[in-house]
Length: 161
Image (cartoon, rainbow, N blue to C red; front, side, top):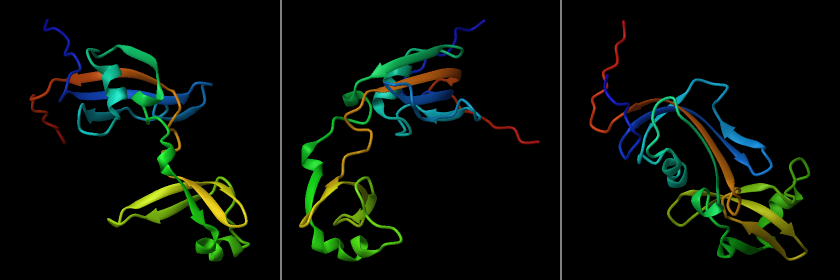
């Protein structure tokens, strides 16, 4: 009987996973859905989550609390911007969907990419908008159950009757 394949760069992995805050609140996962499949290193998972899977085999489980730097990153104070309130006059005056603290606004950068920002505060002259990922600066519990591991370079043929 051959040895079980070990998760390494380029492995095709099928798993259930969950992401939770330190208090146990689940923020994402698929334990109540079909398992997901990805290739280690393809960008589907953040590197810290992938690193927690390395060297595991099918049938194994892992649960690890990752510091912010290994999950969504540390909160960067340079990503918090103070913007003139007058630029948002139309949004702030709209009584059907007013902008308040916690509102997520969509901005477009100079390259045409959409960037979300969370309104942290509003005063008479300014809006403070945080462009950090909403989970930055937070430790994340990554839990996974591995169903299958196919080594890098092994061709997978799908059969469809």
